[in-house]
Structure formats: C-alpha cells, structure tokens
Length: 250
Image 1 (cartoon, rainbow, N blue to C red):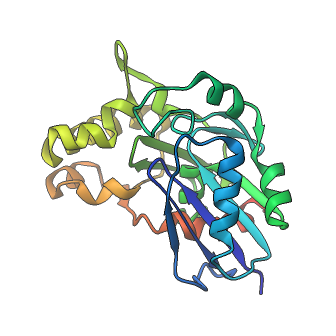
Image 2 (cartoon, rainbow, N blue to C red):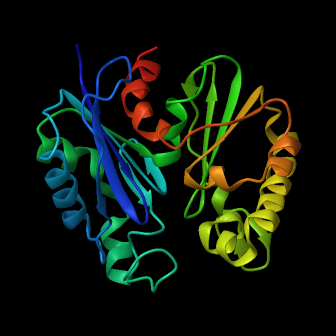
C-alpha cells in the first residue's frame, strides 16, 4: 500500500496528515501556525519539521496558495508579506519566492517524490468525480479555483485576481476579512453573485464550493447556487493529496 504525506499550506496555518491510497488517514492531522516573515528556506524547514511528527510516507503532495507551475512558484500572495495576509509586502520575499522550485527543494528535504500544486487544485482532487467539466471554488483567506475536464487538471488560472471594481479583485471581495466585515448573510450574497458571474464563462457540469468558509454560507444563498452545485467539506484538501497522484497518472 502506498502512503502519501499531504500538506495543506494556508495563510494562517499549515496542516498535514498521512493517507493510504484509498484516501484514508493513517494518522491524526497535525497543524502548525504559518510563520512570518516566511522565506522559502523557512517554508521548507517548517514542512520538514511537520512531517517528522507524522508516520513516514512514500510520497508527498503539497498545496500552497498562488500560481504554481510544474512545481515552481510563479507568484504567491501571502508568503511575501511581513506578518501574514493583508500585511506589508516585503520586496526581498517577492524576489525570493518568484521562481522558487518548491518541488525540487521539498523532494530533497523530505527524501521522497513530491508534487507541489496550487492548494485549491489539491482540494479539488479530493472531491471531483472525474466526469465532465468540474469547477471547484474554495472560500478561505481569499478565493481558490481549480478546473478539471474528465478528471484531467487544466492549467491553473488565478481567478482571484479578476477585478470586481477598481482596486478590488475577487480575492479581496470574497475573502475572510470581508466576511467578517459584512457578516455571513451579506457575504453569502456576494458568493452567489460570484457564481452567477462565472456560470456563463465555464458552463460547468458540476460546481463544488469548499474551503473553510463554505460552512458560513447561509441556507438561502446555498439554495440559490443551483442544483449543479455541491458544498464540500474542507477536509478534502488532505484527501486530495493522495488522490491527485491517481488522477494525474491517467
């Protein structure tokens, strides 16, 4: 049986577990706060220390926010800041993260084969059926997005950076600070408007809405999301760490 170390890297916390090839956890998840300021070296050190609290695995999947292409960080929104999401951006961290080969660094540090993808893509792998065009939106610190066609992962798109109005992108419009400011009812209406704006763009067969904040959607707004929409648990982010290996081997 092949085991996978799955690590979900968020703006506020990093959590991981070890799963078997059926997606069943073989150990209780471990969570640590995301340290700031976070250099790539400290990132690798933090994930290595977390992995040492878990059983040895045969391979690893790491999901982190931002544009990740072939395991290389093109751009990441939170880890370039002084003290976390919405804090001051540090130019030296921008330079350090852009072009950082996370897959190579983590493969060497952990001593096992690694996949490094956008965190929403890993989350999506845990919930999709592999049939038709499936879109996954994750609601958390910001907005995450993943697209699968017949179980095949499409190139990543940062929908979070689409402008809603001048100086406001979806990441700010729908993220956790706005949920706290508006309250769940008004924030949930924004999520419905987001879905309504994306539906004619993708014409998906199935939409999944997940992430930690999906549980805050009001019943009224959930009903308005449409019959083709499924609300999924946040735990899928770790399950997807195991399942992405099967999906990508098709």
